[in-house]
Length: 291
Image (cartoon, rainbow, N blue to C red; front, top):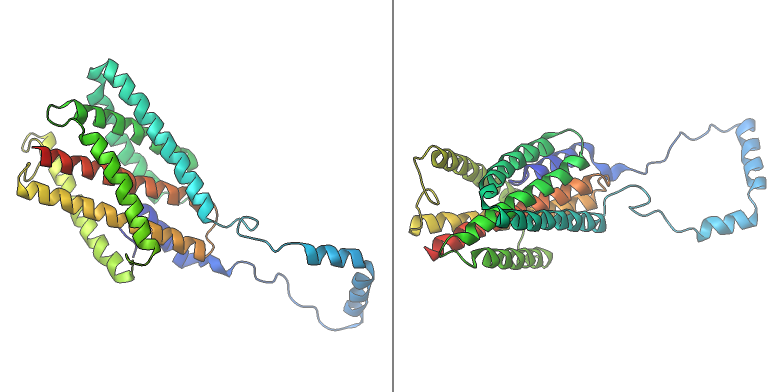
């Protein structure tokens, strides 16, 4: 069972089902011995000149790119492209809402709802939809731009956005270093535990969101800015950070088994989802600490 990111959950299940590592098996069946096959074999050898043999020997073996298989480089390039789009959309939205502050709330709420719908569609579609993945990054960028601008304007929260950005970058680097060196491990047991924790946290977050929309809760929700609220934010940061380790492990597994190159878009999208989640959790944590 995969971690809390439904993108990687779906990919890991398909990898286990298809076992892409079996590609490259010999094609066709061996010929039966006989006069006709022997004659054909001699004809082929006669046609094969010394130059042909030298050319075949000098030819490099096919790599993952030649066979249409996923590589680390392809995931990195697509992740950088989607992240650049997200940042650009966020910056443009920040500029727009700074000139028209009344647009902040509609873009924030609209981006959140549309992003949720697109995320679910991408995670559960049977095919990899590149246009939806690109659209998701643009919508999430608009949401983050409006969200960050709104938080930054609240008295007492100045600088929280910058702190959250720096904390997100540092956490991403630390989690990657920890995973690459083996200090942070991802096992089948840790995946199951994480999955159970993330399901509970998602149900809790949705309940909190509904109660906030209906006016039952205000501010940052359960626990407010007290010790309980701060503890909940620390839990959210921890879950989002470990989600990155599971993302790295899923990418590593996909490369090892030779998953098709098209899944590099899905893996890149999954990383973007985790990074956005981590950033939002850091904003909530630092804002609560400011209170």
